[in-house]
Amino acid sequence: MSKLTQISQRPELAFVLILAIFGTLPLSLSSYQMSIANEILIFSLLAMSIDVLAGYAGRTSLAHGAIFGISTYVVTYWTSVYGGSAWIGCLLGVAAATLTATVFAAFAVRVSGVYFLLLTLALGMIVWGVCLRWTSVTGGENGIRGVGRPELIASPTAFYYATLAIVLLMTFLVWRFVRSPFGLTLRGIRDSESRMRSLGYSTSLHMFVAFVVTGCFAGVAGALYALFNNFVSPSTVQLSQSVEGLLMAIIGGIGTLFGSFVGAAAIILLENFVSAYTARWQMVLGFMFIGTMIFAPQGILGTLRGLIDRRR
Image 1 (cartoon, rainbow, N blue to C red):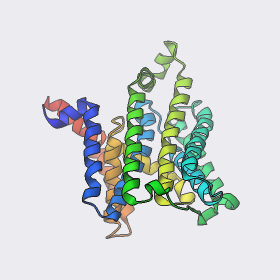
Image 2: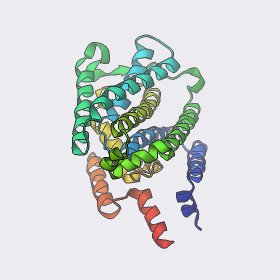
Image 3: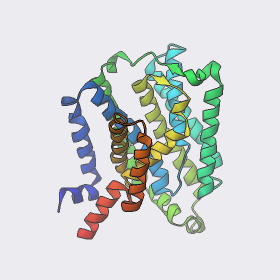
């Protein structure tokens, strides 16, 4: 049995592989390259939160980028305007994101299919509009500049390893969440919501909890991004943030969970490489997405698993 087959069957090997790859990167990368790896880790967590709903519950959300950005706003505002502790700011950011996800979930669980997509799109646009126009708080288009990271993780290497530890912990929690009986119920809802309802399951309650939990994970990613970027503006909550997270999940493989790391790495590395040669790098990303949909509709990791299964 090949190593790739073992990884596809034993998720703990995927954790070891991620730790081995990302844990050794600072030994050979420059500060700029390490910042790209740090960004990959953060957006992997955002893509994973979207993947739980899209791949395991059959609901595609375009609001998680806004939830991500709300956490970033709260952390940056708390540290820059109030001069508060960044640690407390991160807790407040995650709490604000979870609260926002709770409000969004109360509306989103009432619909399904394309209506769920459009409703979450509208909710995300409301957040973007508020952040753009409420200039006395959000700074409008000028945004808010943070005050830096806590002394304990001030250095790039220390912050990188802190991010890696938190992302791995969150990945483990997400993995346990989708592997739990609750996660299996979400798969049942994805396959046939009416049948699960006839069996006595409260599908609305399950979707509500799933939305809130994934919003919390997106909030953790947003708090890390606040410490990483040290700046927040309406572009952090705009639609493209959710779309990019969704594309990362799709390119990596919807429903694979660990494909979020592959998709985030593919898009962020391509963005940085192509943008160095052309201003039309978004066109290249578009062609890559089209190619993925045509030749690898299950994503990179999903296609590799399919090839392994056929070979066996």
